[in-house]
Image 1 (cartoon, helix red, strand yellow):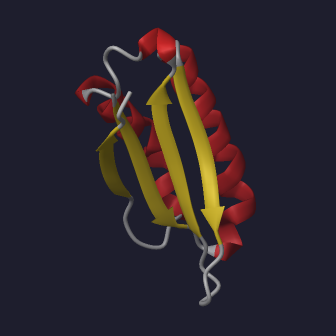
Image 2: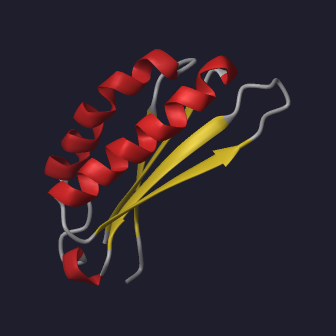
Length: 99
């Protein structure tokens, strides 16, 4: 099953606004794609600009398809408003789980 990981750096001055925007975006995506699991992870950095990572996978209900191009495009489209909060680009990585 294909899982998607999207990581980026958020300007510290925008973190308070970015977090609820990401949470709302992921809530909308879960409503559009039943069975989608969406998580937000963060990592502090020595230079003060934290790295955030969104993780996407389907639970057992949607496991047969994994994250396909349609869902990946929807994630990117829904993330466009977040670009104002970022320092640099969003990086997308896909991995296959062994399930």
